[in-house]
Amino acid sequence: MKWSELSIHTSEEAVDAISNILHEAGASGVVIEDSQDFEKQRGQQYGEIYALDREDFPQYGVIVKAYLPVSSFLAETVEEIKLAINNLVNFDINLGANKVSVSEIDEQDWSTAWKQYYHPVKISNRFTIVPTWEDYERVESDELMIELDPGMAFGTGTHPTTVMSLQALEKHVQPGMYVTDVGTGSGVLAIGAAMLGADHVHALDLDPVAVKAAIENIELNNVSANINVVEGDLLDTVKEPADIVVANILAEIIMTFTDDAYTVVKPGGLFITSGIIEAKKEDVKQSLTNAGFIIDEVMMMEDWVTIVSRKPE
Image 1 (cartoon, rainbow, N blue to C red):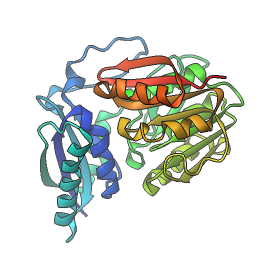
Image 2: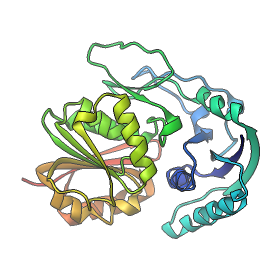
Image 3: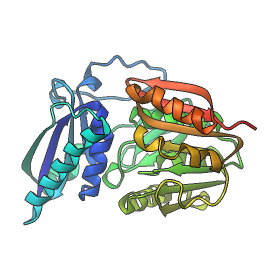
């Protein structure tokens, strides 16, 4: 089978939204080549493992690549993707260069080439993200390993918004808690919450492809007994109050349901919001405080923000 490589040169701000568009168009995964990844200084606080080559990265901005099977409908699909990307300006998202190119690639090349970008990464005191094909042994006795296969998921689990969300969960999840994961994607946050001892995790996503991916990753990590995954729009499927609600999605979407989140979170409970670009930080904080939440912590990594807010008791 022939595959078409769709390459979008864009900004870091637009990566998550464009990745979602590509998944909705039928891509089973994306490769992200960020110019800043090669230049940034990497500390050894969590013993990260990287193998980077300057030739693999653009001179500026970010290149998002997805792979679609060559078919008679490919041209129409590409045009729909371009239109959806251009519509992101309506959400005040900077598209950067916004250049789209298409090339053909052999199936064998696609099935293995992307794996060179993905290695085990220790992202917090306890969590390490491990690709399924890598051999990795725990360094610490209490280390928690989340296995992911990006071929069936929405990312590697190492994007700053995911990293900060997992770090916040690590700090606040206690055994026996009820956690709700809004926009679960690959299921990585739900998996992390369950590994930390949450008695029940309600994970939901609007995209049926995400639901399938999350279920597969949850089974891979042997935490199915503690996680329920459903297809649903934001908090529509939520029937139980939660000790923690976590949402790693776009800032614009977060601000549409802060009032609903306040209703769902138990008194004294937390609303962890991520996927927020720095330019939207104050808007999201205002939306949270307007709903009644108290801001406990604002975390920042690169140009991304995670906010931990609390419902008063």
